Length: 534
Image (cartoon, rainbow, N blue to C red; front, side, top):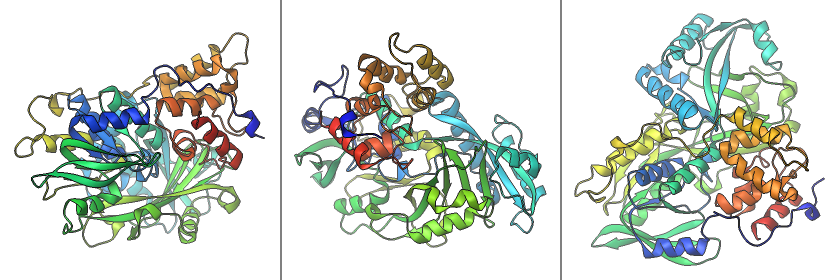
């Protein structure tokens, strides 16, 4: 059992090469004039800041909460072409999604994404027949140039070997296709890091309290540091509102009469302990348009998702009993009851999809990016999907470059001239990194556990060696945070010194997997808070 006494003792001096203090960052933000201020640290804002900094612009990025603290860490954790889009004939969109998916998982972040085989069960009386789905997964794999194999049909018996919890009653066939998955919070953090490496200045837990205006144009923002209460401001030639579900809230700061531009759809998910190994994911059609997912993820099982209009406070979104019942009921189409026991649920989370304003069912709405320019010249951008986060960042930059009057100036590299597949920090073969971590342990001390080595390799890539070095220098940091999770205390120190972690939730929910595993106990939380204060 983890106890407070077991929290490693660390000196008060941060590690070499650590981040500037929040006070130093606030001073830098308030003294400089930026080409671009991005408000919103979800993946859309992060990707835009990354590409803008790569272009040579002076960029600032702020968020009222943590980076990827809301919707961007509440996704289905997939990089996917969008099989259901074939249903609507969006062949070009699927091909584009596949291109981005493969670029991220193969060249940009192979250390943070991994291939995942999907089984699409075809039941007697289901919404789609075997022949149709077989043709569909073949076409889907063709649109990715068969880079993940050829979509095909599989026998129920073979599928049940790979997924023992698959319900086989009335199962006629199983269609097979390939996509990729990730830990969305880790992918977002690495992209923040890439933006900072390119020159961006970033600060989380910094809330916008008002906008700055010069002759009627938005030229910055007033902010409050939520951790200290300090107030400061940022001046910028151009301000980008990338606040996701809060985009209209900020638009009203610019223009109290601004009409709504978006609507919100809630997607809820459940995380459960697994009762058996899962060698593939399930994508089960619920009706003509909707699919329910069962994904092996982080040694757990991720179920979801819902899709219903949401009109409440974006900061109060949560998983309700109705959501839980719906997810479990829909999962029961293809999963045995023993895997769906409520006792196995370790965590539940909900995010908000940002959709274009207008009528109609949210489940059929296009997941497109909405860009609007306000009366004060502030550009607001919302929507899109995780798979195309790089493409969205480039698209927004092209829009900024083409604005009348060229508010960004002329002295920068256009986004079209940037490298097409710039890698994220830590890029490496995760299997090779894990092997090195296992064989390169400290000579006198115990070697790193295999599950910890794999976890570090697939969440940090080659940056894992920095964490291992900390654990080698202080063996206390090499101990597990909780006996049932692979994370070690060095990750908490690393999150504090190198990854902008300010709160226990920053560490437990987004920089590690302890919360989603149901292991963020009071003692663990107190230990993390103690280390963050050092």
